[in-house]
Length: 314
Image (cartoon, rainbow, N blue to C red; front, side, top):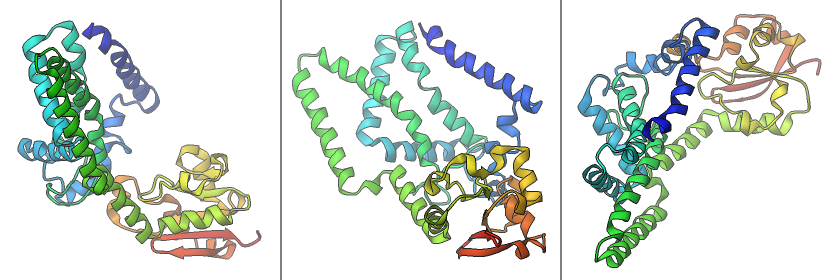
């Protein structure tokens, strides 16, 4: 049963390796290519801010605090007790393997942090801030299943009714504690911080301006640039964009924006490390080197690190 449970993910992994080899000539493009997590973390790593890289203790400390602050103390404790019950009663039986395999998400997250492939911070990490705490959400289904194993074991005891009533009461208390201040959850705290960061950088206002003033015409925008993942907030049809996802058309539009786009949306953040990691704004890099650009476009919005141009003949 455990093998059957793992079969489809195994096929998906094999397909992904073949796809990367076929398209990029590198089966591990997702792991070490231009847009891989490791390359995107390069600037952070070079600045010495991935303290947990190759440090097992800090890796466990950082990730497990995020798990605790995302799932809650009671859920984590119930999950640990459920794992003990499962190991004692089922061992490595087929039924148990289905549950143990779910722990791959936890193991992978730890490994990727240890290797510096991903970046996560919380209020107990080095440094202290909120970043990628949402990665711990992948562990919650496993914790919930292990908690169910514990509840099933309690249900078969003589004191099952008061035991389950106590568990239910504890869950209500934990939920009420979170409800009083949702930012006690690391995921919510990170989301709140990101919303504030977008507002301070001008990203939120820029998206709102384009959404409210867009009256047709194509948009040239590097949505893959740091901080520019704003397409859902802008809300205009995706077919009206020239961006990295449009492939060669994107680079043709960068070379000659006036014949392609009525609007040009850029992030003016200009840090060398952004270019090194592949998340610099390619559109801004191009237009600031083209003296003729300002003869064809006028600035209609500018706030923080964001600027929107409209073609003059529009």
